[in-house]
Length: 462
Image (cartoon, rainbow, N blue to C red; front, side, top):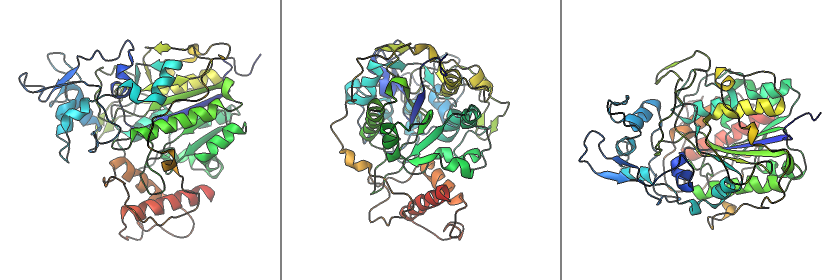
């Protein structure tokens, strides 16, 4: 009997940033997609206020230069309006325009209702049409990036619902893989958020972290581990622009990243035994029309600030499953959240343990994997016509570069998420003395990023 009954020996996950299902794939034509009649009022309590209709006019850049809020209490406003609690009239998902208009920086509030024409996202959409799209995949927490990414690794965020740096001792899927004698790796571009998990910081596990260019080389050389987690570039710098698709970053660069990963995997000897999962951490405050369902608290822990019981899923995010063992044109409307990935890994690889109650009750997508590999899978994924792929140059390990241009090419201040990653890098105990922050020295964002990259490299190499 085969070691892995599904025939899948390699699972590759790319987690991008802060886009809702409706925003990216709502007009794809799935059962739970957009009708085109959806709208928000500028004031949900005033039926005579301006109606802002959904549209197919989303741009790669410029619509969301002010980062939409996605903190727990702000998500409640997006769902229910100013009161942030379920409405007597039963309406929901009515406060996106209201909430975006309240953010500092005077954003163009109607832009929060703009969605992409499918033809504008050739890589993501072509793979959704060629393989499987999940139109009821929800983020695990109605909140920010860090807790949602923790659910991808741990099936819990340890009771925290914000992006603040603290100790994160939760058990991870990587330990379950190790217990089964399986290999894993994290390939990253700048500062890997997964490294904030204490159990991944041990000397033995640091070697599992590699810079992203190693992914293509390992794929071509038949050296991919059983489980691969890919982290995009979170920062714009002169050495490479962000490809995570987090507003206000260029969505086209994320498209190139999706195509890069697909094409490397498609050309590798592992292709016929692989599953590639494209997913987004959370909705990023961008419009989606579906109310998230109730769920189970993973481990009995709750957050007091912001208040969160972890008994409701976050909003829907794009999720696409790619494998030659998946039938072309599959549309899956099963309710999933990020812990469905962990539960599916348990089935595929025969792992012994669940991590929490959340992955224990999560639906799995193993049934979508057929017995044999299709022979008609396209060799490459289509790409947008710009920007040039050359903007994805990587910083070599151990190099602290002196930047001669601004931190962000658009002159945009760093987001809370980016600042939290810089804080994490500052906290690392590395050779050659304390960080500039520990010494109380003021630094520009350029200097802080340069120091952060150097510290991450030294930490992983030490």
